[in-house]
Length: 258
Ligand code: PGA
Image 1 (cartoon, helix red, strand yellow):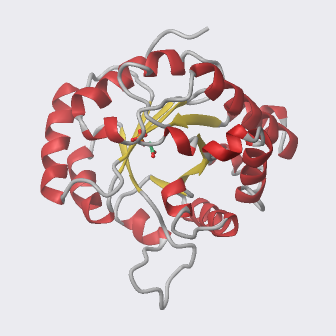
Image 2 (tube, protein in one colour):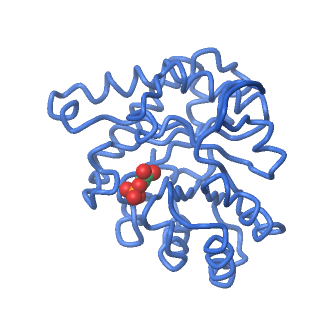
């Protein structure tokens, strides 16, 4: 983290977990445990049907609610899809884009790019995900692969909007596996992502953008990961489903930094 130049963001990704009733229960418990001090930015990205309950519960708190996906089109014949202006109207502040689980369902870099542009246009903060497979890491092409995902995902994002984008580095082999990247591995890739942003935009923009790590981040390893200079927060799956754990990760994000 480097709070002098950029925001620290702790974001939960609930994936396909919890009903609206369970959402209400989680929020009640979570709110009771949260401190009121000046903390990092907090986001909870929840299943679409849970958004109203989450927004209602978190009104007048500093927790922003987000979606886990969106459609890049403004409206029309896209059965089952949700447009960005619908998310805004429902009270969302964030949207996860290009999660590896969605890419595995066929989402391409071009789709990710269109969604990032649509989210920015609507005033949402996109949390754009990137990450390599185990095969790619072992073939030693991680940096090139991630650089390509970032370049394609950010295509056409104007200079004055780039700081609104949050990037999440999530090595696929670390997601839901309990196998976290070491702080050094995560730092190396996050630093590389910042270098790509520097090349595409400017040093100032690269310094200002928040880059998160995701992949089995939990209340035990968060402190060490967040202590790294280029890891500005976390995108947390499993551990964001348990209020006690999520609160502890937020506390780890409050540690002093250099
Ligand atoms: P995990 O998921 O924390 O359960 O590994 C992270 C994610 O997929 O965003």
